[in-house]
Length: 141
Image (cartoon, rainbow, N blue to C red):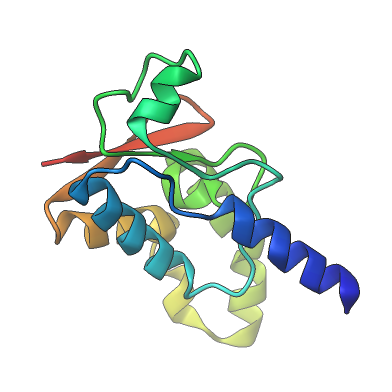
């Protein structure tokens, strides 16, 4: 039990809203966080998941600095929500379980996790795009 609470505290810290976000950046963060809250286990892989564009630029990064929010998903369970290849791989890994359980809804699209999050952002005039294989940036439409 103690390990679970340590893990929860660790992930909570890594999922914090960054400082110095614009109103659109805060909105993007809240949409993403609300979406991720629907899933029981979100692991950041030890990485901080969210950065403001200014923090990202201060790190010396170049891609995504004109965005509203940066999302790092390297090494954690966030990757299938922001990376199409990872969404497909995750779907294939669990497809047998869902077939056996009879939960056909989970088999509708291998890209559900990716597409549904982007759809939630689009409803609010935002979208994300992959910058590399380990982070994405959220932009205003």
